[in-house]
Image (tube, rainbow, N blue to C red):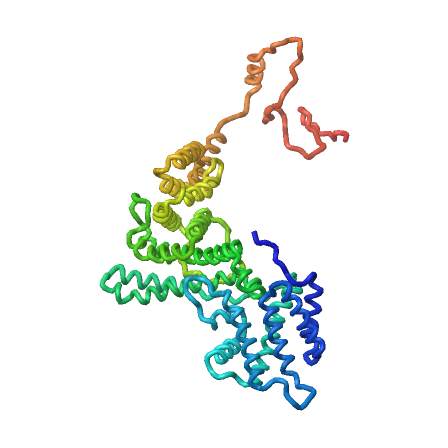
Length: 498
C-alpha cells in the first residue's frame, strides 16, 4: 500500500493559481515574480516535485533575462547561457534518471521518446554538457519549450485528474528479441564449438530483453514518475507493482506458441517420466530464465501465475496501459499438446528454482491453491484438461508429505465425481433409448383396466377412491375438438356453456 503523499499546496486551488501566474500571460513579469516567490516558499517547507522544481529554475533564469531598466545589463550573455543550460540539463536529467531501472542502462534518447520529451531538448542537453554552450536564442527557445511540455504533462494532469490521459507510447515488440535468442541458442546447442563466438550476441540480446522489461516497468506508472521523480518512484510497494506488471507482459510473450512451447506439435512430445520439457528446450531457454530469475526476484511467482492462467483459460490480461506485440502463432486453435508442454515448464521452474533456493515450498503452495478450485467436484472441464492439471499437481507435490496428502484427497474426490465429456455417442444412445420406448404399446383394453382396478383393493373400503389420471385412447370415445366443444358418446356435438 502506498503511503499518503505530502504536497506543498493546501488545496489544488493554490497550484492552479500558480499555474495561472506562469502561463496566462508570458509578458506579465509581476505574475512571474509572484510564482517564483510562491514556489520558493513551498520549497522551504517541503520537497517539491521535480516538475515544479524545474519550473522554478527556468522561471528564475527568465526573470534574470528581462531587459533591465538601466543601460547597464545586470547579467552577461555568458552568465545567462550557463544559467539556461543548467536549468535544462537538470530538468532532463531529473526526468530520465528515475527511469534508469533494470540491470542495464538505457540511452537517454530512448527514455525521452517514452516520456514524449522533444528529442532536440535531449540533444541540447548533450551539447551543453559535453560540447560548446548553445546560443542564447536557442536556449531561450528551449526554456519556452520546456515550460510548455511541463504544462501539458504535469500541470494539466494534476489539476484535472479526471481528464483522460493521452495514450502512452506503445512498447516495441519483444517477440523479435525472443526469436533472435532462440535462433542463436539453437545454433549453439547443436554445435558447442560456436559457443565462444556467439556469446557476445547472446549477451547483447539478454541486455536488450532487460531494457525492454525496464521500458515496460516505466509504462505501468508513468504519471508519478513525471511528477515526483526518484524518491517517490522507488517506493517499495510501488516498485513491486511496476515490476510485476512488466514481468507479466514479458511472460505473456514468453508463453506464446513459438517461444517456450515449440511451434511444431511434433517437437512438444516428451517422455512421460520425468514430467519435464525436452532436453533441447531446456538447453535453449534455461539460461535466459535463470538470468531473469537472478535479476528479478518476482519472476518465479509471476511466471507460475501467468502459466496457470494460460492453463486454466483465465481472462487475465497484462496492464491495459501497455501495448505489446505477441509472437506469431498458428492459425489453428490451441490444442492439448500446448497445455501439456506448458505444464512441463511449470514443473521445471518449481523443481529447479525452489529446490535450489531452499525456500519453504512457496511456489508449490501457490500452485496448489491456484489449481484446487478448478479440480473441485462439479467443475465442468474436459477430461484432457483435467488430466493435465492432475498430472501437473502430482509432479510438483511429489515427495512433500503434507502437500502430497492434500493432493491425493483432492484427486480421489475428483475421480469419483468425474463427469464424462459430452460427445455424439451419448446423443446416439439417447436416440436408441427413445426408439425403444416409442415402440412399446402403452394403450390398455377395457378388460385390462378392470383387472388393474380389481387387483388393487382399497385398504379402507369406507373411504371412496377418487379417480386418478387416465390415458385416453380411441376406445374411450375421445376425439380432438375445438376448445368449448364436447363430443357425446353417440357422436352428437353441442356447445358447452362458458
